[in-house]
Image 1: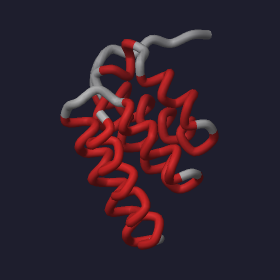
Image 2 (image 1 turned 180 degrees about the vertical axis):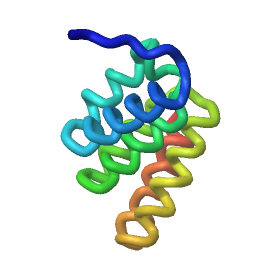
Image 3 (image 1 turned 60 degrees about the vertical axis):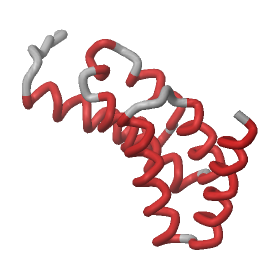
Length: 108
């Protein structure tokens, strides 16, 4: 039996739960899911969830993934949230992330 959800709070909760679970297991698959029409409306939340989970497992890869995102609010929010998360959990990793971001800005 398949079910379709119209836009609204129920669908948003389902998408958020799915993205959160996917991001925990496989951030790259979660990112691919977020490009689907059902998730695109919640892009900022999707990006933040993926970045947060990705940072837990591989902070450097998370920062590389965030840097590859298009400029905009989702990218800025993800950088801010992951930077804060890293600073709380691992100040050394946060310092390395700052150097990575700075290097990307000067290289680009």
